[in-house]
Image (cartoon, rainbow, N blue to C red; front, side):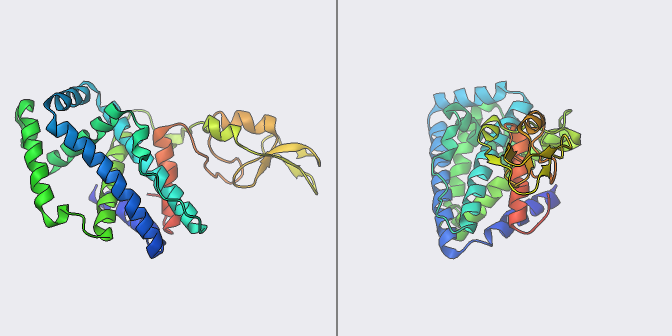
Length: 287
């Protein structure tokens, strides 16, 4: 498990190493905004007994798979914003990560995520703490947060510290989601031979182009695409008959020619796809 975490950190750090100092500064500013949002929600939860009790009760009512889904959605928001930032930075475009991208989650779910991540951290460091009655948890968590903020490492005074903390958060979420996916009875994220359908919004946005020059073969039906005919063009530039590719994309999110992966509406599948994107940016392979 530690090796997996180290590999995850290596992949992200390798990708970040491709950024210029100004780009790293932009990313740090956006990451700081994200942390401030999450900290504000966490402080509200811990400072308001009623809100803490409601959030804790909501968490305790969820099965483990739903807890995993909450963290997966939080991780997906971060990976989506981070890969968009990296892709635009590589082309020289200015695209700061939206400061409020985590707010796409319902407030109750965001509160549940930040409290769940804190409880996971406490369980890892002080497992005996959560053996106490839950009525004492709020006081214990408040003391822990207060002590953490008094540490020199708890005060974010440099860009490096902000990014390191962000990388740690992303890798912890990725590790949690990976463990849950490996323990699930049904493979997710394209594992075990199961592929997810391409996201509907992506399919709708695919361009239609006119075949020019020599006729090309549609690898799905094995027939030629006649010159002048409108066909579908995937992001990898491969062309297909519309009536051939649409049924394919309803079941798969890969190009029939090169296996290029398109976005899906499946949270876990999208995490794996974006993780591969991140690994390719850093010059690495799959995790």
